[in-house]
Length: 403
Ligand code: DI6
Ligand code: FE
Image 1 (spheres, protein in one colour):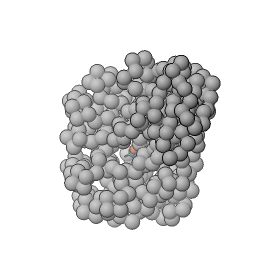
Image 2 (cartoon, protein in one colour):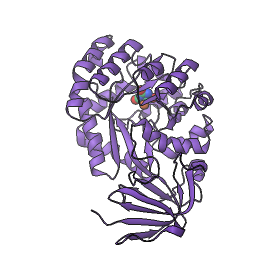
Image 3 (cartoon, protein in one colour):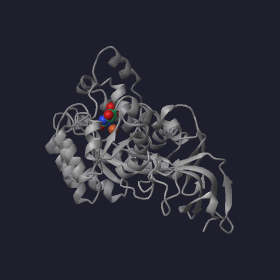
């Protein structure tokens, strides 16, 4: 048992549905932490220091759940700055992908990179997220596209979580693109994904979930179905990149398989929204990719809101479509580009992001949950969304430990 720790003189944005104020805001509060969990959340007027507790006076600062980036591809080799230039000369993302560039260029570079090289490349990206208050990050594979290199990417993701003060959740995204050795034979590659890559990742305990890219430049509905089916057989939670650049029906498929989340969803249609709502699948909005690709079709936020579909917001941090290592910026863009309220956006990078990862023990400030939180030099959490690039973090706390 570690020494109990208490924070006093807090304004707490609990993000707890049980607290009726916006952001679940509670004024003049104390939080007691024991063994990495929130033991008690109580008004200062009722608070007495627990025996032996170390007490941190927050001086009226704002405490929120630690930020959660529920969709990143932050382990990759090489870079795509040249592709950026091509795109600015008018070549589209899909055209570059069709010509063997895009994801496949990163696959070649990632395959060629040794684990320490990938680790070193990922480090500053992850550090940037931590510096802005992230306590939990999801990291996908998807640039290896064979057993050896997909597992290598996942091992690097796990190593980041072991050596840095952050909780890492890994997702196997073997069905991200067709690798060169299967060019013209996506079904053959999906056979390989289902027969070898998924079982190997499951066996090694390296994947907390399985994801896929259902898109013209990715995999069709039938191929996506096979991957989701195999994931379910292996007992792995499911996620899917769907309706990003066109409407393929992937969101409904994700809902049918009880996916934790359907990500991107710009081309979502009315029946899809109903399916997500019925399945309790979270819609993960990724405004960084929307902005970087200069897309115009926006996710139907009004319909999602009306149907009660939970909306998370994530960075999608990746070399091709969202090279943005800032989750707070994404929250801002979710408001300015997609029309979320600042409160929805902040819930999207905390409470709803936890849900998109299937985590019931974080994302909210409530007794019994993990003591993963952030303390900020702001009066109100809306400021974190409104002015996203100004550092405001005072302290980050992971499992009850200030880090
Ligand atoms: N959708 C995306 O936006 C990224 N992957 C995906 O499935 C793009 C990944 C890349 O271009 O490297
Ligand atoms: Fe993605």
